Amino acid sequence: MSADIFALLLKSTGQTLYMVAVAGLIGSLFGIPLGVFLANSGKRELFAAPATNKVLGLIVNAARSTPFIILVVSIIPFTRLIAGTSIGTSAAIVPLTIATIPFIARLVETAIREVDPGLTEAARAMGASPIQIVFKVLLAEAKPGITSALTLTIVSLIGYSAMVGAVGGGGLGDLGIRYGYQRFMPDVMAIVVLVLIVLVQLVQSAGDWLARRFDKRIRPR
Image 1 (cartoon, rainbow, N blue to C red):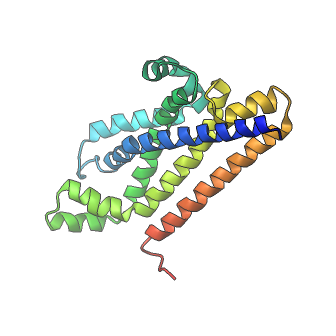
Image 2: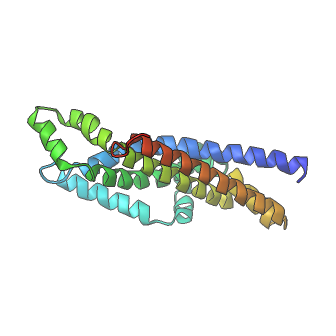
C-alpha cells in the first residue's frame, strides 16, 4: 500500500469516527429522552399522554422503516438547509442523526419497559416526583440495557457512515467506492472492510464490558 493510500485511509477513518461520534452524541441527546417519554406516556403512566404517544410512535416507526439510503436522498433539501451543502462529512451527519434518533428511542423504550414496575410504584408511594423516578429509578435500573442500546446504535452508525460514501459523504465508504470499486483496487477495498470490522469489534467489546459493569445481577469476581 502506497503512502498516499495510507494517508487517505487515515483521513477517511478520522472522518468516519467524526461522523459516528457527532451523530451518536446528538442522536442520544434527542433519542434517550424520546425513548423515556414513549415508555412512560401511556394511560395511567408517569407522563400520561396517550394521544401524543401514538403520534410520536407512528413518526418513530415511519422513520425506522425508511431505508437509510432513501432517507439520505429524500432529505437532501433539509441537509442543505442545515449544513449548507449536501456533500461532505459534515453534511452526512444530518441524515445519520435523523436515522439515529428513532433507533435509539425504541431501544431505550424497550430497556425502560424491562424495569420492574414495582420499583416505580414503590418510588411513587414514597412521594418521588416523575422526574426523580425517571433519573433515580428508571434510568438507573435500565443502565445496562441503555448501554447495550447505545452500543448497537454506534455499530449501526458505522455501517450507515459507510453507506453515505455512496452519495459523497466521505469516510471509509467513500474511500472504498472511489478507489476499491471505481479504480479497481481490491486491496484498498479489503483494507477498508478490515478497518470497519475492527472498529465494530472494538465498539462492541467496549459496550459489552460496560453493560456487564452496570448490571447489578452480575457479581464482580
